[in-house]
Length: 154
Image (cartoon, rainbow, N blue to C red; front, side, top):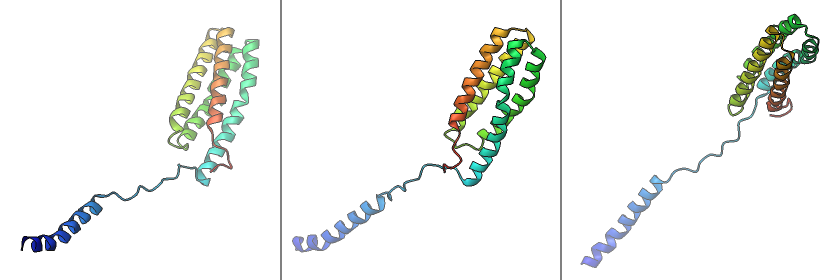
């Protein structure tokens, strides 16, 4: 009689074990595609980049003004077009992918610091310090541009 009861209970116990094992299993993880830019984001980024690059063309003029010691024009460029460029860069940074935002923000801050160095050098009429600040600013700006997505990338 014991063998008979065991035969009746064995399928029930195996069924319960199967139910528990299946219910405890996690569904397969959905593979998330890497984040990409929407066409609207790319358009917004391109709009900001046009203004940023237009103002960045003033680097050549700034270099000339530093070389000739025209400190009033140096400060005018720093506080005018290049100040507007920094503001546009900050706005643009908010439209980048989350993984790129910290790097872009760091480069923007570094560029700002170099602009402050140039402005202070203009106050003290220090050509060497101004040229050094400009060189560092141009390097940071080039790194910043390399971070930007291409208009046809999505």
